[in-house]
Image (cartoon, rainbow, N blue to C red; front, side, top):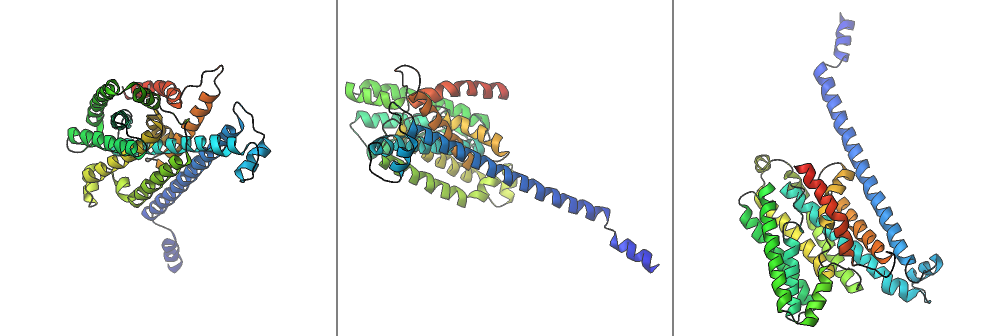
Length: 352
């Protein structure tokens, strides 16, 4: 009887076995998810490094690899100005602008729970553009344009949130945002008609989205914005993760989902405004980065992955624009727009 009792004691109960199996499954799923995330970030980072390297080598003047490496080490030489004075700041500006737009779009789509809710669709980018062009028409330059773009983006975001009603969610948010985007386009047209010829020409070239006139000061300013917002998002990781639940469950955890969502929309607007102020409205990057990042990452908002997708998209589009056949070198915004429009149609078809 003792042996039988020992045998019975040694055997786990079915419920215990189920609990152990469930715990093991969760651990394995977490390990797979972590591994997938690391691979996605590492792969995108490697692709981005290759693209930046190609942008330093290629151009009207081909620079040998040895001269590029010498220039990057700070050694004087005939290629130093081309590499570190022209090509590297352009590539880095494209990467930072793309990262800002990618993170902005992924954040907004995540908290609103709608793949169509990107800054360029719901009027945030349009508000930044309209305010910046008004400032350019009034003679503003530099920081004045940046402040105007930020005010326009935050104003447009606040208007969309206010008109969307309680909850700031779903289709209503997108529809209201599209209406605000049309209003911003009207304001933009008015600003262009009121500007003098020189200001209108400058604003028009800026409006198509370009990273051609890059300065290290722009790169440093945008990198600081990206780092600051990324830090805030890391601190607010738990509340943002709770928004993936329904609002009732989030309230049960002691959160106020409307306030968290409104703050996240404001953060997305700041990211988009910083990118627009430096490079203009580079079309569709914010829209496509989130869905592509989630496909690579597997689940969740995938903000870091979306930032890398956006950076890769802008650097790739700028590289393509610089090396199209003939004398045609369109701004990067025209290339991203041409590539992003079919993606928008695909998303609309899926959502139908």
